Image (cartoon, rainbow, N blue to C red; front, top):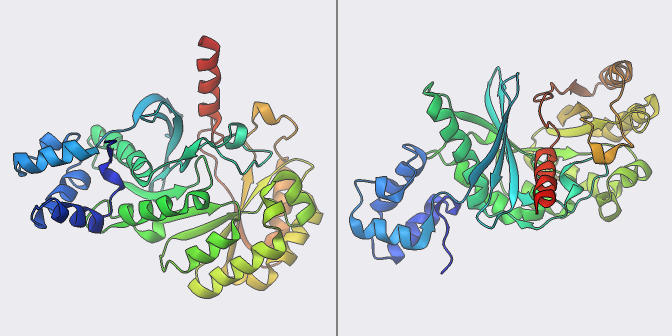
Length: 356
């Protein structure tokens, strides 16, 4: 029997499993406390459980299916972790320091099939989805890293923006959100969590119906179909005339602000023309829209793109602002390490192949 990660269970699922094993319901709360409050590394450390319960846990679950392969630390405090999964696959997780707390960017898939032409994550196609347990374990490993410093710091924010498309792994992503948000566990506030999608319209409708307070970000990157299809092949399946009605439904259903991610590529999508088109695209929803302008992190394999000049970024920003579109330029983190998402993983896989 293949064991699964204990971190993949919601509290209600843990209660149900415990009772199915003939154990008392209160055992679930004890286990949950050991996992997320005391953050032990082994089932045998849960000293107020009887031997039978510990043995059941050891027979059915694992606690540590991720192992740390590489840890890169930036001068600005950003830390990028390269984790190896039980099957040998590699994923990335990033810890970033902000004035408001510590944010972790998690990965949801091994590789990515969305195929954005500027992105390091898509250099290697999707191998498989991560389980909810493997996603939660990324948070747990980072939190334990922080625990070791002894400063009492905690993960306060999460962005689901790592390798992969979260909505292409929808069920596991939703389970992950409920686990980390649980008030008796890590208790990371829903409004401190953001999920980013490249634009899977059906799942945007589903997400709106989840009745979560989790934030949504859309990787837009272009204001018209021709340009968006050129740099993001997902636009062929979900062009703007399909995508924007899904966004409108989300806004109407949740009344929550949405962030539009817009990576600025020199002489591609950073002209005044695109800025004005973006204003037109968002004009009827600008009261609930925020545009995050992102300076491009160059990727060796995508040398057709380069970073927009500062004056182009400023002009783009000013056009949006002058037309009532709330916007900002993303503060960069980890520029002295492999900053682009998927970059460290891609480099490590290349090294491993060269050694083989």
